[in-house]
View 1 (cartoon, rainbow, N blue to C red):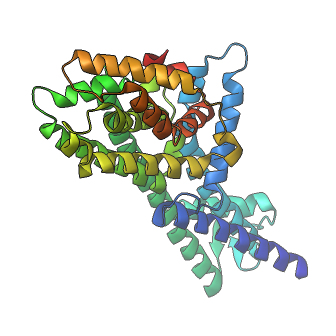
View 2: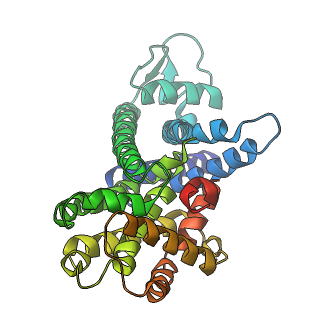
Length: 360
């Protein structure tokens, strides 16, 4: 008797783990609140990283399959775990509360799992039949839970791909507008156009909205972290670099009096704060603190600043009078986020050359 109760309690515990994970992943989607899915995602990502470095495998191709595989793994975990939990709960009832419609009732675990699996997928079976009111209730309850889990998994899948499509569209837009090389100076020049940055404010506000949507979508669907494409311009690190470098150049390179309304505008402030908020929160959700460490290369940053300032000047945009002071300011701003972006790129197995080709 105690042996049967043990299996039933274990089954209830396994069912609760699956249901809580579904609830936190689909109905209360916030990064870090998952019971199993987030840990499963990190583990599978590390497995794919390991496989991608084996001889005979193309890194870019192997890593690009991680995201879709994770969705299948998470949905399979929900369904299989629930089926196993109910099988353990139903197992002691075989031969008594649940019997074969004809002949002798098999009482092994395989039969319990068979009955549970068919009930969970709402297909139903005729060769095993619940004989009491309680086990009929349990059968109906499992069918209802199974239908809910399958529906939740499909809804989650569609939501993830909708968010992924919007993220990729935003990344591709930044890629083309920044000269196809993550060049924030090129993006700044395009924003100016033929006026004095007045139209640029609405465009920067649009970029900020996309950054905030990116933050919320990754909070809601942490599995998005692990959709890693061969093209580096889809990388989160590239998106963060272009956005924050644009804000840094506006703050440090443009003439503070001539372009004061633009520099101090809510649009630019929102871009800087929104980009940094997105970067920090997303990195905290899937990077360990020790992974944030990176070697600072301030001289390279200064070199990139002077190159960017030269291009900006060549396009008729007034820059600060003292570029040395501007470079100091730029390095100070960049030190707040560059190492985090580098750590994010490294975790997703991108080189810095792929993330910032214009700086090489």
